[in-house]
Amino acid sequence: MIRFKSVTLHYGGGDVVQEIDLHVRPGESKVVLGPSGVGKSTILKAILGLLKPETGEIYVQGHAISKLPEQELVKIRLGMAMVFQHGALFDSMTVGQNVSYRIRERQLMNPEATSKRVQEVLKFVGLEGALKLKPAQLSGGMKKRVAIARALAPNPEIFLFDEPTVGLDPINSYNVEQLILKLKTRKVTMMIVTHDVQSAMRLADTIVMLHQGKFIFEGTPEELKKSTDNRVRAFLDPSTASTLDSL
Ligand SMILES: Nc1ncnc2c1ncn2[C@@H]1O[C@H](COP(=O)(O)OP(=O)(O)O)[C@@H](O)[C@H]1O
Ligand SMILES: [Mg+2]
Image 1 (cartoon, rainbow, N blue to C red):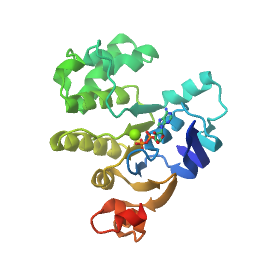
Image 2 (image 1 turned 60 degrees about the vertical axis):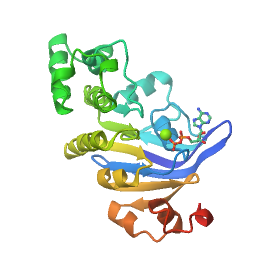
Image 3 (image 1 turned 30 degrees about the vertical axis):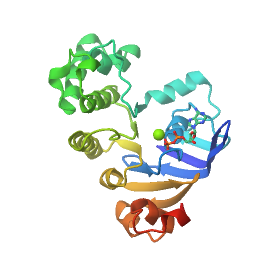
């Protein structure tokens, strides 16, 4: 579904990631784990075609996206849904209008089917009653769930999550993780970026760990726990490692 071949990404200031390879298979839940500022959101931006690779190529559902013109990229993006770190709901719209936004914009369904779909995805996230509320009337956890419902509404093939539980209290984090796990049982392809080790362990089929512009680990949550790499150990449990030397 997603493949990076020797991809280097940079902004004006220098390389963020260097010659990284990544492969997300259909139905897989892949977590990119790493500290703040390491380049996780940048990787998502590149998958959406919002940042072109300096070198290498990114393939989304078989399409090499780096050379595509904008109108082709738009089509590729239709198959993907991004859940942003801070939800990014439209404040002037109701929950229902937010959730149906992509469907209406792309004219994917008639109004009757649209409202049925909105009900369905709001039920999925446990917010059937919130249809007519505005984002300002919602808690942080509810906003996140509406953002997930909005992403789900047009039935995308790939989900991209940027730090899905950051800033949420334990109960809301738990609820959002449960939703992601529910999506996982539907065999949706997901790429989740996070700095939260425990969350990564719970959500991932496979985890890749990003450290100073490179992936230094790839494997299952169990394999991550057993890793003997000092840099991985330092991140998993800063108290046991000679943190200052290895970071
Ligand atoms: N639009 C931008 N212009 C220049 N530098 C940026 C931009 N966005 C992010 N960066 C830099 O790229 C690096 C990676 O950022 P980011 O991908 O946001 O990290 P993460 O999501 O892992 O916290 C950071 O050093 C950040 O300052
Ligand atoms: Mg980020």
